[in-house]
Image (cartoon, rainbow, N blue to C red; front, side, top):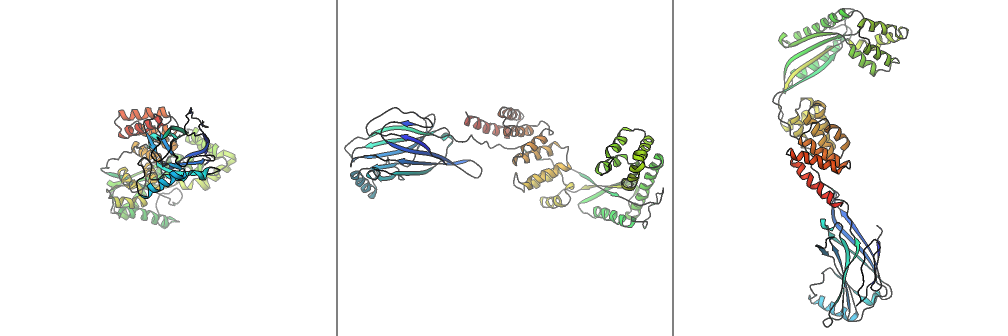
Length: 495
């Protein structure tokens, strides 16, 4: 780092005016001093120490044999109520140097002198010589905007001549970085979910003979599809963490042919699927909910949107804006001379002919170890409270920590607590833009307001941050009270 150059002129008996600026010139004699103050920060960015570096060019300095020049670097607060003295630089004439060495040898160095002081022979600097001075001092808040300067004292002999002192001469204005507030993000510990009711679904795609609804196990690919269904159902029924409550089966049809016939067909196909489950797993009628939804126009619209079909926008427009189902079908059949409809029949209609099986169940409450295992396999079975306990296993602001809350939000997208806690996790990771998006949907609780204050500060809006903290404090936020104190420290540091 480039040193700030200061010209300091010292006279042995004269005094003069002093002025402080970026280039300070104090006229007393002849001496050049380069000064720099470096801030040493810890891993969190806080200033721990100041490193003071000076290069004193003492060319032309003349001291008589009995004389001694004591240069004491000093840091003085801006209000001049506090100060810190640094190790001294002592330059002595030959006679005085012998006295000092004898005092050091016998341990009777004057108390005014620092044990870390450096003693030099003045004559060595008569023609040309530079003293390189480096020291470190623990940083204190009052050192912000303080001045680094020198106090110089000339003594004539060991005991006979009263010392002559030139008072504090400021050389360097210490301007530290603005205070970095340590804000506390706010989380809310969710309540324990008394009964965890959950459900998992599977779409089954069976093959049927034309216009028929009987579920034939060995027809085309039905055997493999039934095996997939069995695997799904058995896994839930045999899971000791779950208690299955009911089964919901919904049948769907593709939208070609007669609308009323398709409704009946989807209903009958759902019933034959339900019959299979009753026979295979001895499920009572009381736990079965069966219905047919008929033609799946919404499913078709989604499939078209995801496809690469050329007339995508035209198809979606027809589905969305043509309310009469028969007119809608006619438009699709005639689109682009029928070529588009042929593509729909061959590629997008078959997957619409399906049954959706939803198994509802109650999940037991988990210990922390159990919850962690479930988090990695079936996170949908956890409660917000269990997600919260899992998060405490990870470091705040880390990817794993954020991941827990993002997963919780996936399964509880409308929960204000899930929104708040995920936003808080993002704040701890300094992802303030994403945090604000969630906080805007999380209500106006004290915790939300305090977190919005943190976001506002990091957007550079100190006044809004203060307003949010004050609103949160009125609602009883302890974190907001601490955040206001941190904000005030920042405000004072930039004044």
